[in-house]
Length: 272
Length: 348
Image (cartoon, rainbow over all chains, first blue to last red; front, side, top):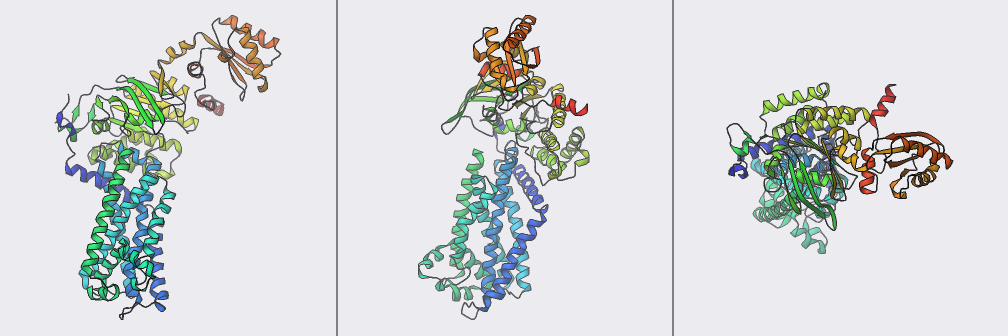
């Protein structure tokens, strides 16, 4: 008794339900590890204090802008680099324990595992970003471009986190070992953060570093976040680019990183 | 029968299947290494087949292909009547899999694990919860149902893993080394559970390195070595291949092994390769045909060689003897553990 329809694609409702179940499972895991949540929020908060109170004593960015105002969007973006490692580590763990084999042996949509991972990561990153924004407001950071700018900045920060998570997910599938993932994600990302507009305006960086920093995806994300948080005028003053330019730059990088990482990750996932 | 409502749009949600497993000429290469070199394998519906072989023989690779986790480079296979490559998703709806490494989530509770697998396996929420409750009871995990799995013992985890693979009453159940790494007590418990599933008519493919396990649980055994099936039949069929009986000698002094083997080979006019020795434990086994006379002959030969004997028995060949006869090497590098005896001693 065979039915030719047996190979029909799963109905969208089913795919969404599978994604929801996978995401729910990931979030449960996060909530069951309160230590991880506490540390992953405290660490960037410490960094925020360091930059806002210690570095601001010596660092100036010109244009009458305080260093605290300058650095908060960058710290948020940088935090996402740490947080995104969670995706790769989680996937490597799932490979290691055999959970991926369990999922792959079930009649669920192939995309559910990776999309469910992205969905739960986005929520986790979003919560973390909001907590940090509250902390930043508490120590005197102020949005200068209204509420929509504030919301926009958080969205950009989380989007950046999702892009890094997709990269990290691929690394997790390729490297397979949770500890190696940490190094493999960090090694390419950390220098990118330092050679960007994160902690100093690009014009103040060493000459050879400037073209690298200008092309960097991290610069694109940070400039877009700054433009949204502080306003286009301020962004032009400190970075020499308009918000819409930075946003385009960011969008292109985002599509490229997410597209390539996802394609590679899906291929890895299928191969098993 | 498989629950594949989402695929069939059939009113009952059930589809009759041809059942069983058929694998023909499965080939799988990893780079230059040929893991499977033409595996033929058949499991009739409602039977238990043991895939027996040492580490690296190709057991897990075979299971991974049959459960759609790996694509074969050659050959074809059907599970419950569906092709594992072209109809992979339908196959997934028809199978349960308990892997070599417990594929359950440490951070979730036992109940959450089961419900997750059930719902991903297409059970409605309430049905998944009900079935999880029932399985937790059957596997004696009700008390631990709401504890995170990281607090479970190895045996409990394995039982939960098995329960997970039964959430969606599978047409074919794959158990990849289900008792590896378990203590003797847990192994016996798990054997009981698998025995009950077998009694209920579940089609089961079981891989194991333990001869005793295959002997006890499987209706038929396929012996795999070097990526090929080298023998197939019931445990008795395979034992008959060794022919007659085996004289097994346990030596008082381990270092006498070589001398004892030499004396026995001469006494029974066998080439030295037919006599197997384990100098670590101090045992020598010889295949014989003559029954009681052979025992007398063995005693005389050993006495003449001046070998002191701790124990001497005439017995039917074990599957380890079969394996040795078929492949020229033991089924496992280490001696297989013997849980029944250990437990008996512990209780005595």
